[in-house]
Length: 391
Image: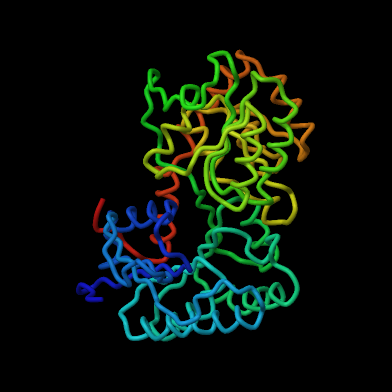
């Protein structure tokens, strides 16, 4: 890393390969454009087939650290060893660099980022993507260790950034944090025109013109409401169709259901560039994440904004942050977490309901977009003393 005179480097540490991180790509583009730093570097993990160092399209440099412990084994000892190796790789690579700001995006990187802060004198931002210690998978010794890391490190950060008001309030109340900010994971403002139409899901799957097409896109895994959707649509009339788009452990079962039920369909995953057009071809966007942990209860799924920015009304789980948007903008409906509730809601929605909800979607796109969140994010850096030299 060769820093320009007077400017340091901003590193963002997250255990990702940075192949599909649209949220961080938007943030990286904004930081490069603002000229706050000589370089912006995403520090992630390497996998076979990827470069260890490359320059992304956004102007952000991507550094993938290559360790020896690459297995997905879940036992606590192996995960602890992988955590220690990951921390050592971060410190070994960046301790001698001229760093101005470190963004830690994961608890697994927090200790190394705190040590790196003291070694370099850089500012440290804890930029959490979720309420990590309160996820459904956090149990037993792993949860105890995660909470210990959080307790030791949390006050060493100069600012704390969260993705919803509920998560921000939880951290503020629990730890007495002062510099707490919310930057939501929302898309760029839609550039859709009234006449824009998406790819014709009806034509792809042979669905009639008067049918209601409901779409769920994303990971097709347990805990995301996919099972309830399949159960609900199995009992719905032929005019109500469900399209499941994505990848995950449930794809095989979904294909079986699609073979048995003419109103259930599976679509292979598509590139991020293709996804908005496919989304526009639906009448409703579905997302039924279960209220099984605090992280789910307080979440504000990016899917909510992906659907509404595409002009597609939504039916989502009845969660506080979700309800604030859905009810506040009138862009859809929330339902309690059950198959029967989803089935009843799908049956009662008519054409006039959809028309009104589409108007609400337009309001969401105008007011909840990355252009606005970008200003909040850059304001955090300004508050820490970093001055913009660019656009």
